[in-house]
Image (cartoon, rainbow, N blue to C red; front, side, top):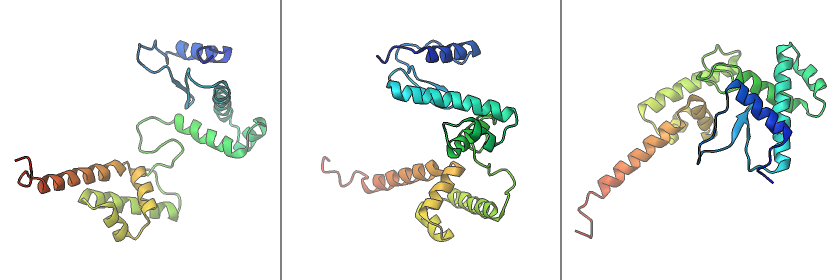
Length: 192
């Protein structure tokens, strides 16, 4: 039954309560919680719940090994049940989760405010700066793609990275509504 709490879940809940990370859930609110970036909820099936609990424990182990100075290779050797790609993902998550919240980068990403490490990063940074200026000027996605001669996927990725994707979409919706309002100013309304 989904309402039953396993011993492992009870232990995790008790840990979260002792740290002050959990509060009583008011009626109508979600009972899902997030631990180590993994969402766990009361309606999960048992297999998925076991998988997520194992992921939480693995991330805790990776966090501790990194604090102890272990390399990626040493962590992979210690965690025999997972491969290097999974360990890399966990390391990126752990390092990202330990950064202060509110910066321009997402967990595991090199921030655009840091100095670029190579020519590829410098090129991408200059492109993003041009994209930002063009968005401020009010250009559409198609106009930006044509002007910079880049692909639409590259533009989408850069807009996401800059946090501007919704800016263009919101502006487009507002402009479309304005055009529709101008076309339907009431003179052609058959109800009149």
